[in-house]
Length: 229
Image (cartoon, rainbow, N blue to C red; front, side):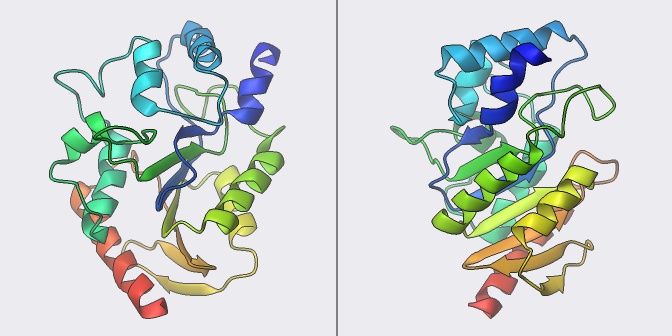
């Protein structure tokens, strides 16, 4: 993994820091084929070694059209996270799949509703958490960067998802001076840092996680934000 250290340190995910809705997960997924990692690294370098790539452009660069092609497939995690936005009342989402295809994790541009920052605690993708990766070396520096951007940009909403040790560390770091606002119906903890509502949820890809549950979470977070304003 030494060949990918710059990506592990500096690649955070997709979208823009300058947007209202942030989603923070453990790491990007990928196929079981480990050769895909080299393709992803090459794409990241070819696109300029940016902190945040455009989600559609990145996937086109690695020749993966499943999520953005003419007939896109719903991506399980993204569909549920987009459902939070639907429940929250984010504007411009008439259809979850169309939003995934055209707007999710995009850079600002013509006819693009660029409102999501889709980031990860680890900069290196893996098929699952059981695959060997160095997930520790850059965790603290990445948390410092995310914390800095969050406190300077103050997004309306940040959803941290996953119950790994790294996620627990992220929750502690990002909400270190805050107290719980509430616990939502799905046992999601919620705190407020500055003007940002931060929620810590289980991973959307876990068994039994329904689209309706995530939409209800969005509604509850909207009510909490209004109450805490």
